[in-house]
Image (cartoon, rainbow, N blue to C red; front, side, top):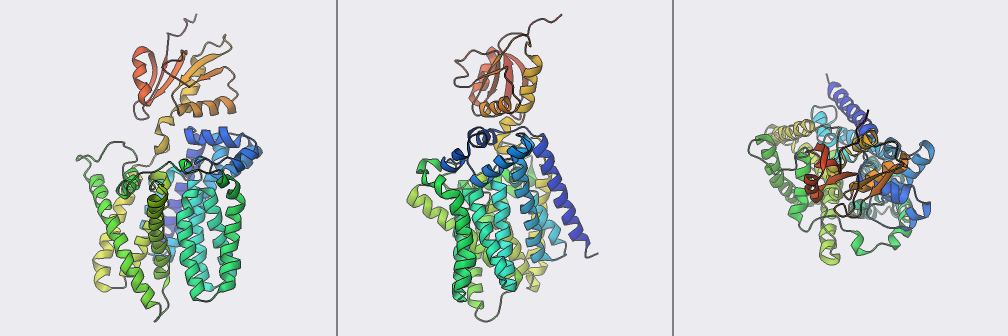
Length: 485
């Protein structure tokens, strides 16, 4: 019976990974994925290494170039690096949760809460660097825990390398990376492990990140860091809302009581848990002098300390440099860090008889309800950040089927940024007939129009061929198709 939770957790992760592979093979490419391909993957290597942009996730871009060179450019081949990063993430989630809960039933609940979050799932298959960065970062945490368990140098070296590659995969991991390095560096200095600190922990990761990022970052300017929000409250909402309202763009509605309650409760619980971390970390620091920490306390110290340090760095960067607070994808790392911190608190509380009978079961029920809500939003059709692109591949096929093949070209006017995705399909599928126009949809005459956003109002003057209200996209044409015999 003790092996059942482990089996269920492994099966759940296998199903999630299989679904990620299916999404990578079937879902339409998206604007940001297409921009990466159009500007960097299909361009000379020099562009990847010298041109800085928030869209250029250097390590992921380089791996996309390798995949495209080996297997050709397609949605699936360009998403292979992200799938590999997603596999790293899922494996690390299992190992870290098993450290806390062993083979107990909470193993399944904790794994489900981390593996089924739809906002995280989007980036475990989309051709971006976020999922890869998350996976590498959690492996760095796992390797550090192994080092503190066994004091084997190779674990410290691997943790350092994983951290450096995580930052190279996505710069949003820079703040948590600095926080984790500072935290563990302080521990190593206190233990007087000077050689391990310099040669095995600081140097490998720094070199890996420097080699990949030094030249691109030398071209970075403040205006390049534009994705985010202007308040911590909005940053919190930007992570909680898309996790619970992934299948809806509307505000919480009374007729959805469970989702509404989870949303409101999360906005209150997250600050409360963060506030609780401060005295608990202080207590652990005082207790360290008397007895070694058990596994859950070590994991809590790493995750809670990294989470607190990341928030402090974000606040400082916003105040001094004007950088925006993280939101949605740029704050993706907050989800596993907060969840693992909460899980470790649960495990620590379970040592108290009263808490084990009251607080831990209540927390387990809340996590289970969150996991259920996540599972209810399961989808293999769209990525929330680019919902408008969920039907782009299908729409290009529609135009190909409707066009007059006796003509050498067909003009298609497309709203930005869907135009980048259409351009990707034009390039990779050699659609020489597709004459793409995307500068001014309302001023550039064309035979077909792909409309989203503010351009949707133009559909009233055109013949609508296809409409998707969820994706908020319309395919229209200026005139009726020619009569066929």
